[in-house]
Length: 318
View (tube, rainbow, N blue to C red):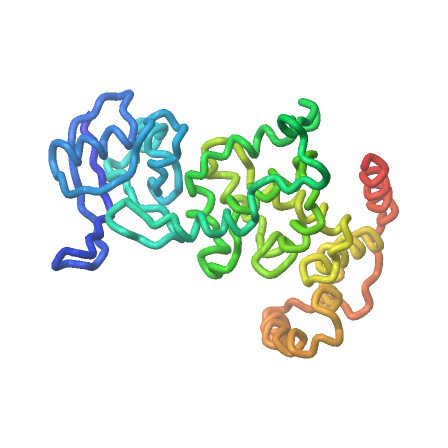
């Protein structure tokens, strides 16, 4: 079959240093992957095309890139599964939220720095064992999914928070943090959770689920971040905007059956946080202008007692 590729090109050493798209066209087998096509372009059409690849088996993560606007591994993305129906080209771009080096190659140094920041190594207390630290299999089963991470960077590429705030640790680093917080051999939970509770940590995730959507190994980073939030609050790390927001949200729904939007920001930021309160004024004005007027007196909805029963049932299972 005839396939068109629209590849984003960038060469800082060329006369044209502006990022641009270049189209290629070639015959491909039905079983071919995007990586097969890119390698053929490099070997048969344009030897200047730069990309990373290694195992071709979705194990090393080297060939992660954006394909038709979404991050994924080029080696396990079949052309037949993503080729546009209207004869449009397959669009291939480098990963997002990482510095571009050349063509489809990005600089992973910021990625590794954030992973290192969560201290991804065991920190046990007490005397060292003679051989190794051993944990029962059943205590490690819940970590099987997160340990499948191949550090490809797909989740970081499509993280909507990192697009606007590069101080966010990101889904990959936070999923790695969960791996050690949840390890029964580690004794630094309070230290780890305290650091993850700071700015750029677990409370900066917006739960957009992009990281879950693009992860090629089913690690589900967002789910791990939500567990870390719960663990942080259970450990007593509740004096943050995010923790207060979560508690105020839950308390409001439990009490009245629906959200008290007027008092939620006050309870989240703190009524004596004048800077935050003043910053909310423009948002409040825009809400008023668009007809969004939360009631001053927040009343319970009919059947609110049934909502409370749901809360009680969930909490009884913890």
